[in-house]
Amino acid sequence: MLGFLQAASQSVSLADSSWIGCPKVDECKAEGGMSVVPPDSLSQHLEGLKLFGNKDQVEAEEEIFKSLNMVLQAVTGDQQLSGKLLQASGIFTTLGQILTSHPRCAVPVTQVLAELAKNEELKQPCIDAGLITTLLPLLKSSDQDLLLHAGRAIGRICYGNNALKLQLVEADVQSALVELLQKAQDNPELEAIGILKTISDLVISLLLGDESMQKLFANGTGLIYQKISNWLMSQNAQLQLTGALAVANFARNDNNCVKMVQLGIVHQLLDVLEKHVEEGDVTVQHAALSALRNLAIPVINKVQMLEEGVAERIQMLLRSEMPPVQFKLLGTLRMLLDGQVEAAEILGQDPALLNRLVQWCEAKEHAGVQGEANRLLASLLRHSKSQEVVRAIQEARGMKHLVSMTTSEHAIMQNEALIALAIASAVNLEIIKDAFKESQLVSNLQKLLEDEMTSPEVKYKSLGLLCSLLGSGDLRKQVEEAKIQDTLENLCNHSNANVVKQAIAALQILKSDTQDSGLFFP
Image (cartoon, rainbow, N blue to C red; front, side, top):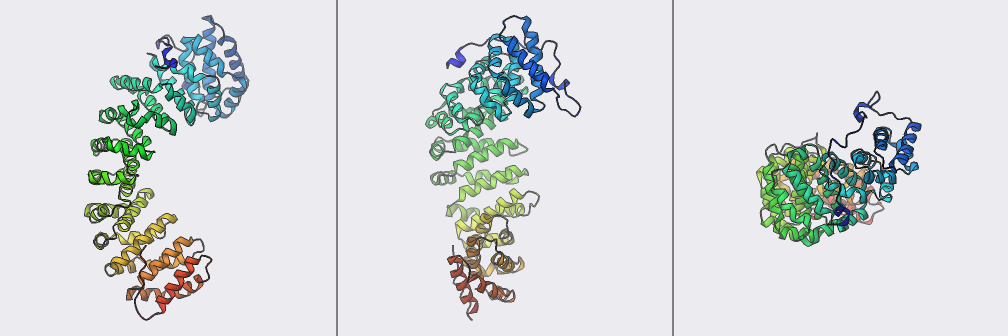
């Protein structure tokens, strides 16, 4: 184990580290819930800490406790003002000295550090003062409060500092964290006071840095990865969450994704999801779906995951009534189907899936779910290019939602809708023309074409879809009644050459007597 942790820390009992004669922080709040510490008073206490922090006498500890209590009130109150004073005071080195020379003061010092590390501007002074080196041995402490605050302080100081995370991993801090997670799992009291979550958060924080994450993965042989299976299979929701988040972060790298699928992590994630289908933990479901989505990014993984029945197994979550789960489920399915013709054809004819998608397309109170449901419908058409899928979506009354999607405020959704509708028109316009008439598709296209804010790409695809619609007598009549010819003539002077070319083609079709639309097939 690294030198940081080999320096055995003194075991400090909760009784020994009590705040002598000092009120708790929540008893020192001013009216309105804000701690009020005058700047002059804070400065005096910071100077007092410097004075007494270098002394070994036990008598100094009472003054240290009092000053730490005042500093804690300040940093939990006016963070901006207290932060400036703390930076100017150079107190950080002193706090490290107090940790090593006054172990009875360790709990309040770590609590102060955990609070001040919430301030972005105070993290670097903590690092410069070598406080991480001083804090790490405390992860071996048997004092629960000390362990809790030290873990929080380390996690907050390291957050966003990828170089420091790599140093910790190279120093093998993960071994201590894994040991703590095991202890916390076996001790409900440690979980109750937040130690399990604190250490779990620290593990995930280390995975947020690309280099530290790769070192921890070590091609599937790293300690953290080796423990994931145990965490996922445990009955503890926090450990399941840690395991799922770890997979999701390891899966930021495509090579890691391929390796993890080969090692069989997918079905372990699915097993976790099944445990939480009925009124389960939403955060665990969300994390597991995020992991599956990331794993499905490499094409080789899509094929293997689909062959192993992942798409069918995660559909158990279709009955979920939790919007975060619904949102992530839809995104995961869409990632799995990307470019997979056979899977899109199968799922695109699944009545249960389509009916649920149409239901979520109408979920106006949850815009994210509504948007993802529309995008998955469009994806089914785009990747299958199947008459049967067109018919199934039409029977589920899904076409009107794709028409509405053309008016989205997001250009990517407009494009996806236009492509899907163009494909549907090309493969089976006859069975969907009535749905297009009822949902005012022609009117939507006209607005897109006339709006100066519409991107050239969207205008081009709108014109292509318009050409397809002219193959239907009823829709051609709608186009003529809307006087879109004037709009097309104006677009012949557009600055984008592709738009001009497509506008000219649409005009020629519109002016011809035949209904040969020259189908636009993206």
